[in-house]
Image (cartoon, rainbow, N blue to C red; front, side, top):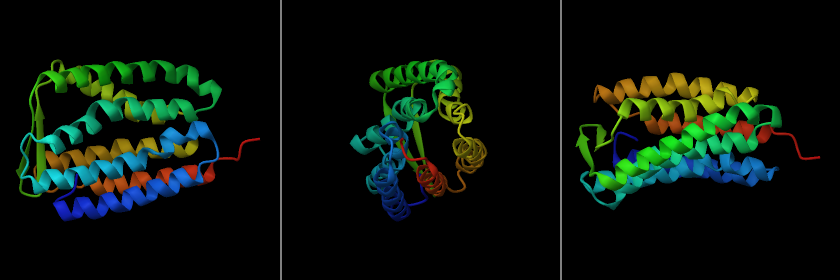
Length: 205
């Protein structure tokens, strides 16, 4: 999320370009899901530019944005990390991936059965949906996304996971205060870190 439609569109285009570079540099097929994450984040921001232009509400752009942000990322990140991780790390990542899948199912059910709305609040957008057991779902979401990076067994992904944990808390605080939305800058830095990870991956034997 950015602070305006223009900022979201510009940031989304930039993050998408980084995603294209990530995918183009992939040398191992199993690295592709995680390398494609910036593409998803870029599209996510471009979709939010449409939410800004629509003035919020409960239109298709709001629904698409929420689907990407909640159930899709909850399973995409741990699945991507599991695919890229060395065999010794996959054993401990299996339960994390299962938590991500269960969390995604719970989030998808909530989105399918309840209304999803967006409200523009100055330089932020507030999204609202009716979820049962939100504390459990948030805990599962964080374990699946941040936890998978921290347990990946890869030094660069460990750095990314640490940055995600600290950066997300900072962005969330500013967003909750309705001061300014900085998630787009956060996504851009994460995408650059992923590009560094892709470039540093060894070639397959």
